Length: 318
Image (cartoon, rainbow, N blue to C red):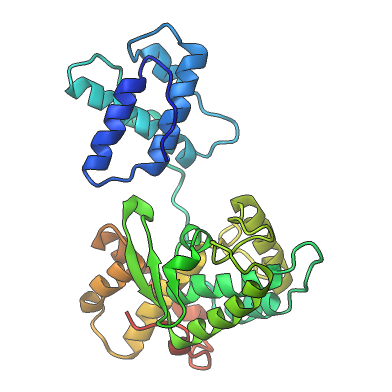
């Protein structure tokens, strides 16, 4: 998407984004942030032609609604833009890398088999709501896909109908984290669930673009989907083990640890299998996948009942 830019930095911002695109980076989110920065400069520093320390520090005031990570993401494109200006011989102030700190590392909640049973039961007993006629079909299928395919929540929520093949079970994840794309194959069980879901939703929204739409056919808001998910957790009586509520993202962590545990049971060499898991999950580097190794021992105490819950029916071999 192209944005209209009007500040004194507009030409340089356009050239910077074009350079990123020419190197193969879609730079979608960063382009949006740079357009907001352009408007910020128009509104507050319309006469300044140098990207000064004053401008950067004014942009770098943390908002009350921002987490540390959101704050960092808002500063990153401005820092990269300033470095670009310096490289082409234009003076610009570069914000320090240490200006915004990361949020503390979250300890994933690995759902036990009993918790998964309770969550799926709560999902399957959701009641239709008059002004939300498809919600009780969207959530059971969406959350099963998160667990069974190890998708990031944002990938599943934004999934378009054209990127999922209900004949072959192929899902094309387009330009996800770090602008990486990948192919994910569904198991027969989740593919069957998606076909049943699609047949129902297509009767109500026959020409939808989003595979998991809200009642208007649009992408669910993050706030709305988390609010409903928290109600599901309450219904299933899922308790936190670390003081923080379990997240949708934890289904991805659970997928990875359960897949590793399944391989351990089968006597497979985890080091040999990790590259396959890494590619399937779309990790930028193998070290991101090795992270899950230390989580596997922690699921042993919650793994009773694993034999009675056939994950192979849900998880595709990667």
